[in-house]
Length: 281
Image (tube, rainbow, N blue to C red; front, side, top):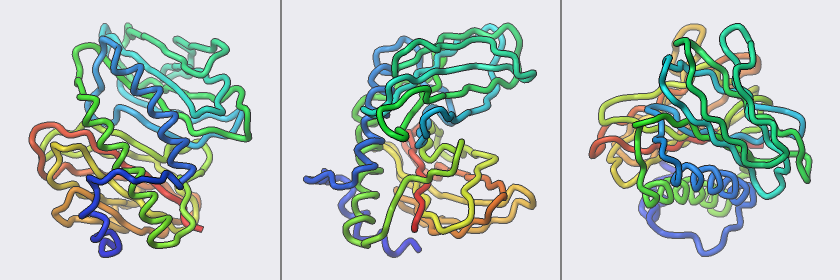
């Protein structure tokens, strides 16, 4: 499947003159607000997955479970596209107790949280009110003394993802959408060191065909992508070419959990890598 992207790889550095991919604009609206707030924070991006995006219907939510260390200060920043009216963040512990929340009536929730107990915590981003049926929403996960990302690196990664969508939409004439499987993230941003990887478990994509792509900032020289079934660890599709864009076309099954493994095979130090799941219909 990689061959359809080869002409595009040569033009990744170019800025699209027309932003015709409407959903890409919604994604940029959400991420721009969240990452702008992150840039002025005195917290840094966590290693591994550090921001996520999802298409969320009004009165619905998307969650992320992660290990938090006792006596370490974390910050969670949320935001949505221009239609998002009221977004909330709710943090629960492993026993489903609410330990902190921001349910103010605005679209840019923020929580600073220092757990007293090390363990797994679930961070839920809930779209309480929206001017339309749904919005693209995003959240950043940060902690004290973590990774600082130059704004230029962030712009490069988001621009690359938008250009992938525009290329597929215009040049390949596909009916492309961000994955809209309920309660599932469709965009993952991760800070990954050279020759290291980050894996995302319990990804449900439903039955159908998907494009899954990974690309990174100017530090990245080679990214590889693997999609595996969680039940047996079998690789159902992968891209191991030595390029800065990994892309696969994958047919997934309903009611099945998958693992997405993003491998930073070569970079100049740590790299910000963004991965997105698209529906094809």
